[in-house]
Image 1 (tube, rainbow, N blue to C red):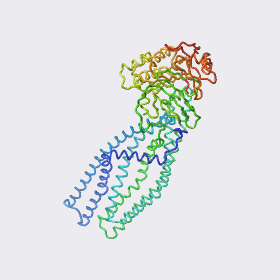
Image 2: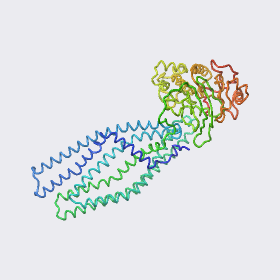
Image 3: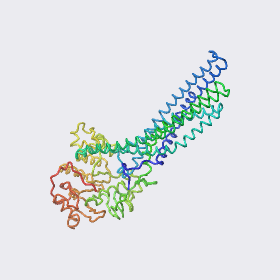
Image 4: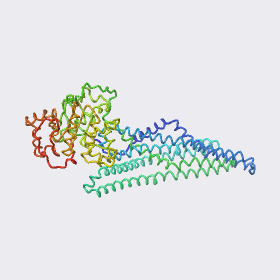
Length: 632
């Protein structure tokens, strides 16, 4: 069973390793900029931390030897000191210039590649994850690259490279100081590793809690109308407070652990290292060493131990950036289940006939919906799929689109197995109108043109005219340029459905999949739109799912599905004469509603123009503009 986003376990070590690898690959891709960005500031640090103090030490030593300083004797050291500082500043500026470009280019590429990887996921993945949480994760994945690179540049490479330089110089003055320093660092690292691992687990829990907060916020805002309709504002607010409180508790737990455990270990070790260094330096001076040697020993040793003081800050920044990055890469550890074949066939169907051969399919952990289903849809045929809820009608359309893969059998279009085709090639053959049309928070024109981005304004308006979108578009504030709101909330259910139909018309594909394509239309609009749809279906292969039987009564053939099996096939008149399952459904709808074991009926309408004349069931008095079909 799939794991929902709200209950997904925190990322493990493999996700962190994958995040590190991805960031490392990005650095390697940008290596011409990354190398100077990493090492030029480190060279500048060498100048400031070690070369400049060395010049001061030599100047102090010369002053002690000469009994004072003259301008002539001090000038070379002063000029050298100034040159070192200027050179270090230049190194920093050039490194910063390169670093800014590494950050910007790397973040851009990670934003794009992260979105590409999400788009490659199958439909089940998005059913199991909050959109808000996914948004946070993919954006954090790109954003945290900047923190990672900056910490690596200024805190790690910028400290370790000068440290190595300082240790080499210090060795020539006082080898025992270097040995003592290395021992103290080794002891500190060994003692800190188990504490750091425990803290990492706490941070993972903290980030997972934050992701749950963002997911809940997005879920609530997306369903605000439902919240208001059920007067559930207070309940949602309480749930939000509970999630925020949980994230606050885990934040404090991880922070307190770092302050009370990690810092409690690191800080005393750093102080102890510096005190021992000072004592060694004093003892070193008592052994007849000069001023220069004492200044170098103490200054270099102090600079070298500074990285221990910075350890927790460095670790926290890396921890934060890698944990958030791992929240995204953890999603990539489970590959999508619907994939393009490694060696796809070219799209060369001999016709647009559709055939399901011995198809078996079940959702994960559920009973099979289809078990050996056979169904043949000849090219150019108009087929209506009817039956009770749960019979498999909508599932059949999703399998044809390869939103999910079948467990056994084959699905063919024009003799080609769709599993051997690229998904994009397969879907280019199909125009699909789902039960609940999805709208983008874009203009009305953009929502229609989504089916074919290269369409001209004339083609878009022609499709809108055919779907009767123009009837309401003129009343919108900015006409076709009006933003329709998130999920199309500024449009009624019937208006959204007409926009979806306009997309299908503009798509101009040889196969039509219509899943309750007119369920949210009022009776008058439905008559007009059905007339356009019948013209659109002419010469195309059409599979039309319908709960309201009168909308498909004029089809070439009706297929009655019940519990994943084809129980009847034939024309409307043939099935009525057979007095079987279809006839019983028709009788239920003639009374206005389906019975307990049949599908709910939002109302009926006369058959479309050009359809076979059939007896008309009574139409219940309901608001058809706001109604929608039930899900299968």
